[in-house]
Length: 479
Image 1 (cartoon, rainbow, N blue to C red):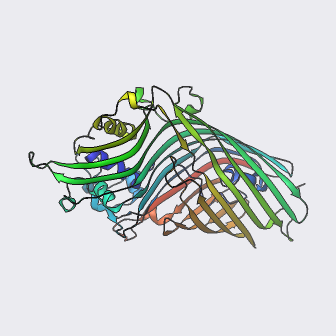
Image 2 (image 1 turned 30 degrees about the vertical axis):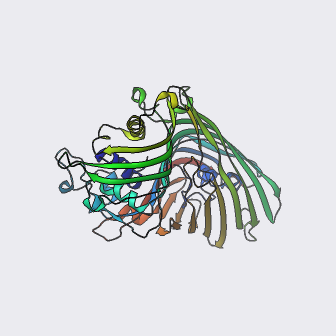
Image 3 (image 1 turned 180 degrees about the vertical axis):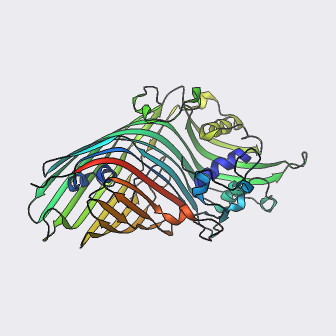
């Protein structure tokens, strides 16, 4: 639908703009500090650190079930701007052809998620053996497509110029697109409510104040379209939309005055979104016979990211109900659009949506999820962790959703260092990661092949993931 629109939608697959709280090589560890709070706030009472100060940590992640990355250069080279010159235009921009993404044509609905999770200065302190508190700051951004048809995704991937797609009616497409960018500050309180020489049961709660910076959604209830060549103009193509029934909402806060995204938005009274969130979890330990300060087995259960952000601002928030027929979108319509806000404005203008029909507010839910965790102490510093994350949001909810996953993570844990190998099943695909921790400093990925894959090594990954963190900490003193 034009080069700009195609690049924006491909961005969901090949770049990161949140959402989730995986860090699977670090979060389950008793040496995870504040990183463990996002998996289960009750894990604060299990921490090996009496004091943990997160200076900064971040995660970039993407996954999908529609395309495999098969460019002649890796995603790491793309992000670090080390793409060979033969794959660049004269101005230095990367030539990213549609065939660099190989389609997975199996007739199933297509999903994709991209997020960045930036964790700012955060503090966790153990108060004796039974109580822990934490104060966290965080900036999250995410984009997600759910339940899109293969035919529609082929249009997005190839653009309007692929003659193989011409004049083929496509009816009753139903899909949803959600984006959300927000800052949060969280207060965690965790306590051991049962504790003796044999067991420990802990409860943890995090309450979060949310500042919504920008968000958008398109819930498509029905779309019928065809791709046609314009007989009046040579080499000109358009999408003929015969019927569309959808809900559209977006904000224009960042577009106004060229604002940027940062943790300073926590204190910006002009943000268009406000909300509250919460995590609640339990942790149960069976103590080790060999070491009473360690556990032989730990179970954790939590519900994370309960809550929503209400975007309500007469100046910056747009929301429309769409039910129209006989519309055309050309390859030039989106040439000057910038980001999701700009694309929303183009759609509004093309469909003649007026301010009189603007509802002026919408609520974007957090990625509420069930978090289950089991950690077995094998001995000699070796652990085996099982993690299950299950999305709890409804299929068509206005919310970026936590992709459901199952992971098995062997770990070697010492106070001075740690090594983990997450083995993850996500979006009907298997991936393997690796992480290393030196004291409280860590670097890792939950999808190692995604960072390395290219057409040269035949790995052809379906996503990528990387995380890192810098912290200072002191080990908890034994009584």
